Amino acid sequence: MNYINIKANVASSENANNVCAVDWYNTYQPFKIVARENNAAIRDSVEAKPCAVFFTNTSNTTMWLSSQKLEPGEQTLYFMGDLCNSKKNTAVFGQNGEGEHYTKCCIEDSGNDTPEQRFLVPPVFNEDNDQWDTYSG
Image 1: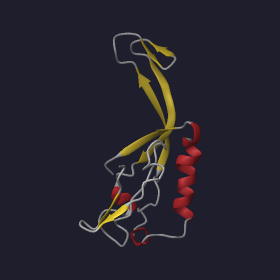
Image 2: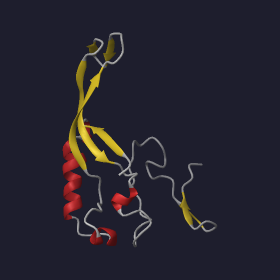
Image 3: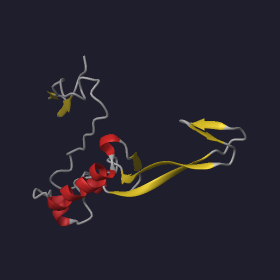
Image 4: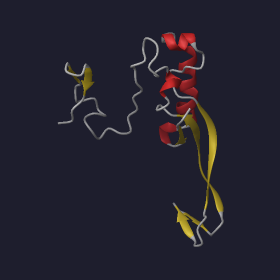
């Protein structure tokens, strides 16, 4: 695994959604791709473990971290979160160029402020390169 993500437990990104629900999905969903049937390490969703992230003021001056004042060398709990494998680790999801579904991808929306994120821009099949393209116009 080459990439990791740390997701903060805030709003709907808390541990119950980021870790528990996706683990249940990965365990119980009945439609397994061939790569996953052949290799128990292949997942349909990210895997995560709870973590605590601390922040240390390594500067020589007093600083503010949000509403908390930190003196030089002082440490504080920054947030609780989940240490996750990234969707960029394609082999974890059976997308490493092998098997029947190696061209499938993971989609994650980070907002709804662009037509692509709201799925308002239809993909267009490009016969010249045999690929699906999305244009924002």
